Length: 208
Image 1 (cartoon, rainbow, N blue to C red):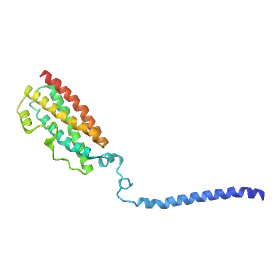
Image 2 (image 1 turned 120 degrees about the horizontal axis):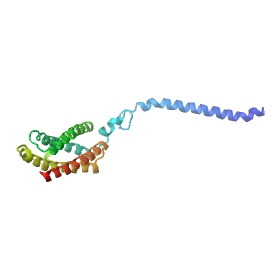
Image 3 (image 1 turned 45 degrees about the horizontal axis):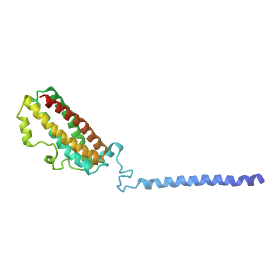
Image 4 (image 1 turned 90 degrees about the vertical axis):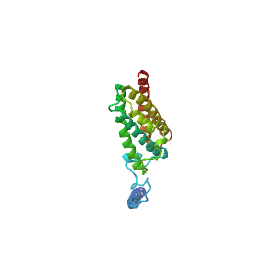
């Protein structure tokens, strides 16, 4: 009987712990459907949260990101228009190489920024295409279209340097003020690529 009295408290304690654990699991199980029914529309809820691949473009952005995309799209589009004018007009091999690089890089970037704006629920245009740094006037584009050979190469280099400088300025503002990681990464690529092309175009001008 003494053995039974010594062990009884431990047996009862163990039984109580198991019972408590079972009750706790049952309570958690019963609570789960309540959590699953929470559709309050909060981005943090499981039903409303974006997937990891879409989160950056659909949720994490600020006004600087929107303006960067809205302004850089027409800026890139004009660079592509300038590049198209090189067909049948450009003579210098290095100018032709830069033209090809512009076409290869900037069209995919335009599509990427359009996708961001659509995901953010923002319009593609900010309505200020001609107020941006580095944008060519209609007369600039007409003057470029009117020349060929070395005259075109020289004019193209001069205008594209100014155009690229405008893009770099906008990209640096995005790096400083933007909140979207993808947009800031693209801005960094714009700075890297276009500063390198500015340097190349400067060397071309020196020898033309």
